[in-house]
Amino acid sequence: MPRQFLFDENQIVALFGPNGAGKTTSVRALSGFMRTERVSVSHGTVHLLGKEVTGWEPHRTARLGLGYVPERRKVFGNLSVADNFKASGGLPKGRAFDQAAERVLELFPALRDRLGEQAGRLSGGQQQMLAIARNMIRQPKVLVIDELTLGLHHSFHALLFDALSRIAAEGTSVVVVDESTGLALDVANYCYLIVGGKVRDSGPPEKFRGSELLVAGYVEA
Image (cartoon, rainbow, N blue to C red; front, top):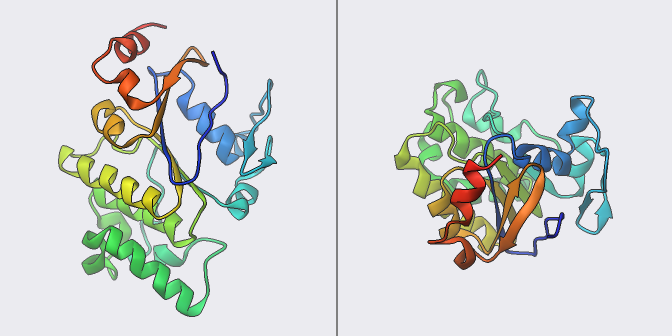
């Protein structure tokens, strides 16, 4: 069984597995956030966009073209929605920024009327939209999202997965971890099932839909 995750341009890759399987560890290793916790990759290497990025710090992977939305939504609660858009490095300048901001507002129209409002006052679903939007303004080549819908009202689930489809269609590869396996299978191009820190199985969503593979993966240690 392969122990690597592969993804192509315009593709959505979904990672499945039980709690503690290694999904978050995998995406944190890719993003560089393991380094911020003084944790390192002990076996193997991490490659991103043709470069080995093992042990890189988050700002370096971001500069290379990675956008990362961690498990717990990361927005600046005391800043307005509009100022959250600007609170990142590597932003486009001038007219290019305005165009990028307009694209994310088309992606998440619920944010358009909240631009002057403090981000901390948004609902959980709207904060997740903002976290994704902040990354997309930088126009990343790869967007990684850990637990897309965790703790959010079900009314946001389909909206967020639809946004991922649109993001991928516009040229950004997406790696997503989420418990909503049904919706993830609807949008994913390829899937990996992780159990005990290893890839137990992989393939197109049709391989997992209606089968016992995911059930087995989620109940076995």
